[in-house]
Image 1: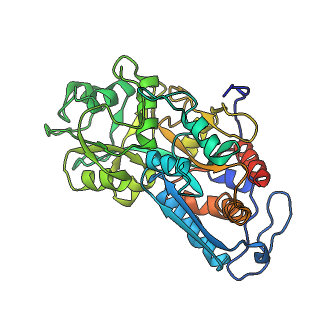
Image 2 (image 1 turned 120 degrees about the vertical axis):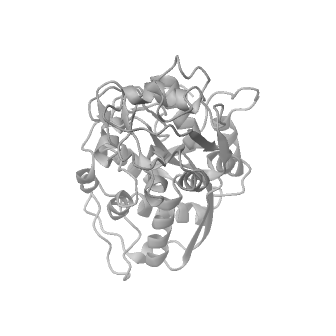
Length: 376
């Protein structure tokens, strides 16, 4: 795919952003007229599609999509949405095989062959759809570097130190490299226990993209959905988060909501402009540096993991819903479009902030609205 757009996305970030643009939902819980969207149009619950739609993929978006499904099915009782959080890689494979109506992925479809592969994900998906497959960003899932270290409520990490920890080059918490960037913090001489995603994971892909971009000397390996560092593997986001919770001295990379749910410590990240705490506003600043690398309604984004913008939290992923631009089954296509409108609505974006997700900048949300409207 040729890259035709390299525009920088800007817009309001943080909590205030959500009110700037809403995508129309299918209806309200009481089947009355829904809240107007940004265009002022109102949509009634009578426009709800019916039937069953299956999706699979990203476990990082599990908490977000489950909230969206709950609200959608309450408003549209004739619809059933099933989502299996098996991981981004598995979801893409099932989508290409025609087993699910959409895939959730924390990385957009690859437009180049992977190492050792002869096929290309994007081309395979296009062929399976019989039309272009689109990558539609739905939510931003910050990746927390989450740890379990008694007595250490604040921990600062740099890209280089993070890379060395996950490469097995720094193995104890009181290592001089960690102590140097955490003055005044009493660090125990405890062993560091690294946990990583054992399944193919978009979270792994984005975390290693961050390490590769921000600390190339200390993370020489290529990025990808399969882990190449050190540690012990656990399946899915819940697996690594639960492992750290149960292991004193443990550390992992996991989507923010999993770190919050398990009450894990979350490191502040210093990319070169000072330590940045993981907040919705800080993530929004980083997302605003994204550029569109897809064309038209294919909203594949290129994130700037090495950003040194003050106050920007750089370790993040954008969760995409991967869909066929022209559905083979009209009823399924209508159900998918209606559900995605609810998923991207102002009410849903507000709720998602409360469970560890950050809203997309307004310009990206506007493009998502246009793309959903163009699905057929």
